[in-house]
Image 1 (tube, rainbow, N blue to C red):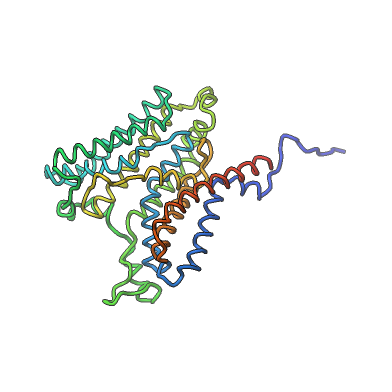
Image 2: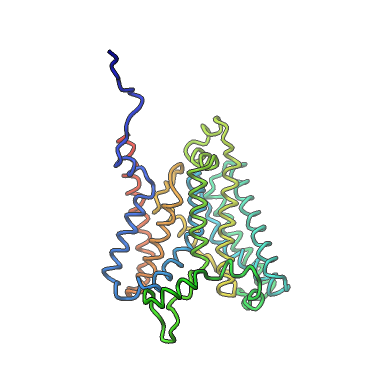
Length: 365
């Protein structure tokens, strides 16, 4: 008679423990709480109409485009405080060749992505070669890029803004990829059915879904796939968890981190390209404080400041909370001066909640 004994090395984990171990749990709960709050306080204000939903999704998308790559970098144990300044810099790199020198918009966009990618590479290279904290290196880049943006713009144009880009980009094939809309036909059909409201002239309240939202969703899916389905994702977690142990196991820590710095720089350039082509202008002050907003969204999304733990999906929910709160305050008529207070409190609360949940999950293993 054979008796079956359990292997003490194999331990079952409850569904609750697995749920608590998910980094995006707090952000999902926070998103639900925020939606319920504004459903009660602003339910009749139009916030949850088709137009209101697109409005807060568009605000969320602008931050979410930055938050997904920033989440990967923070999981790898690094920060990039230069992404906000990179937005302003990328904007003038697009605008000056187009408006002043008459370049095709496609060429200006290509130049901007190349230059921003190069600066991201420099940030990563300095961090991994010198061992300096990325906080310090990219803080220096923040000021250098902002000064470079202002100096070049005033030196070339004599102003801090460049407008008229629509005249150069309106007929370009690439423009709809950044400033266009999709799903116009289904939305018109839904308006005819009465599901989506119509304006006084009979047209739908929204004409389509802005491309910024599509970019946001696509980037989040790509980053999630990289983290959960690829060897590169394992390298990211290993680099942020214990980089010395990761090196001993053959993980290319330096290459991984440099790649992620380039990725965040390219995301900032994408953000700038969308802004420039939607508004038809560039401004040296664009992107101000966006680096901190992106970090807030990522932290609310469950990523640890110490690295090694987090998710792009969580960053997506963090950005969604940001958009809902910003537009919700506007729709309810609350003084918008309170917005930053709320976001700061949300960040502190998220850090405390994530620390509690992670400790609870570790004890239950």
